Image (cartoon, rainbow, N blue to C red; front, side, top):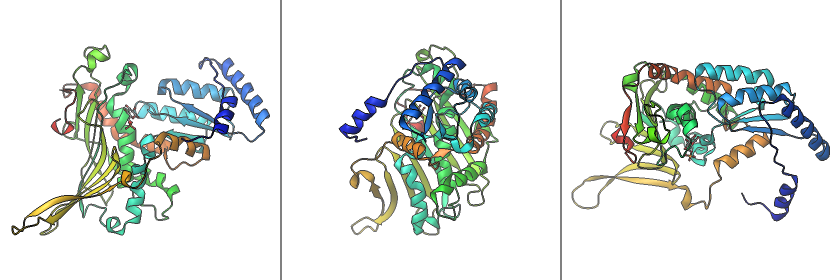
Length: 384
Ligand code: BG6
């Protein structure tokens, strides 16, 4: 973010770092006093933003102490990093606990994937291109694949990852949110403000898997157990999950979500496979979230020459051909939270709806881990 020298000097002057014991009510009360002093200096109304990037087990007591110390006035906003709970039961508890002290409008649950430029573009692409608006349903689309593969491993976050795993880390949040953007009914108002409610309906229409072995694959990269120093750990670093929607626009269309660490490439994309119609060939539309953000569609063309052969070629829109730099997703969410814009944040109901989908998988996995596959670091997700 470009910032002028004058602003930088101002920020240096006004920024302070405060150390406190986050389990002590006394420290929270002292914080309240300090905030009141700052607010006096700057003059009201002042916005208070608490940004919690701490595990769900630590978030709950923190929020309670904020409440007990009385630091939750209307001008206070709470930014929460995922994971929001660890399963349906704990997320429900967390939602109830937060409700005691904060209204839903004060909450900003961060899912930075929603703020990625290409993810924000999904709504615009669907809503503003008549060609795709009419064909965005089961009559034309055969399957949807959403993939987020990473080359990195767990990057030293052993404790976090041992409590989390790929299902909680990427599927519950990022991948289900991307799915919701693809599956949601476009708000009739055409207004961005109505997107969260549309995403929620899309999530509520996704059916929890009923045949776990057939619909879900999980894996762990070789070397993970040594890395986390937990021989026998059954935490998954790879998941592939096929879901179906009860929405009448999508019934029977498989929606496959795939994610994994230590794979062969860093790539997040949404692939929509269009049906072959009569004598036509099938097309694939790719919404590439990262890297090389853009949109690609396969076209069938006649290969030059006398043979009358068909060839599949790609029609591409790449952001980097038109724009020098894309805003950082995290910058975007922080600015939106300050502005009070909720579109790129997930509501309590969305969080609960996504845990609801994953609940049977978590229950099944807790009973038996014999399905866990082991893969070599650098493997291709297609081979798993
Ligand atoms: C985070 C996950 O939310 O997203 C990490 O906790 C993951 O495990 C990261 O590596 C990926 O984000 P990005 O923006 O690099 O795709």
